[in-house]
Image (cartoon, rainbow, N blue to C red; front, side):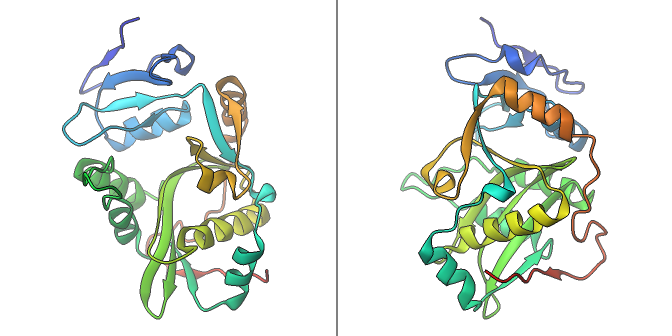
Length: 239
């Protein structure tokens, strides 16, 4: 099967169910990372993922990793960390810092899939109140966080980072606690990994994911600080 090459100026995505089985989920190549293109992709269950120097690759994997906010699993050690409360959690306070921290290489080769082009594209989405970040601070230092795109009552998680033990887990825990109280139905984690499954994430097939996406994407979610000029919100919960 030949992979569709998308028009650079007016990309039209194929049906996400037509993605390849090998490599799993590869759907199309090319197009652009304009805000309207990214939003159209996410509303269809498609996301970009590629290395610097490669063309833009678009994916819709056969198996999707998802986390229901109410299904969050907290280990004893993580509960202890959360109860220490020696940190602050904010929303949309430092999106640029979070995505740039997520883009830092995590292997010896220095590779990262969050390219400068991707960073600029998601910052633009953030400026349009379509993408959001959660930041974890300790003594004024950014120690963890995550960012993603909201599609109705679904949060499409893109990446996370930690600069200390449990930094990203604190961010996910607060996202789930706020989400469970605010109408967030599902967190799309895209690809399965042990870090996410340890927090309660599971796998569903593409058809199920697309069905749930269709039922959630027209919801209106009152994401904190959707107005760009509001001060940062601080999330406080008892664990």
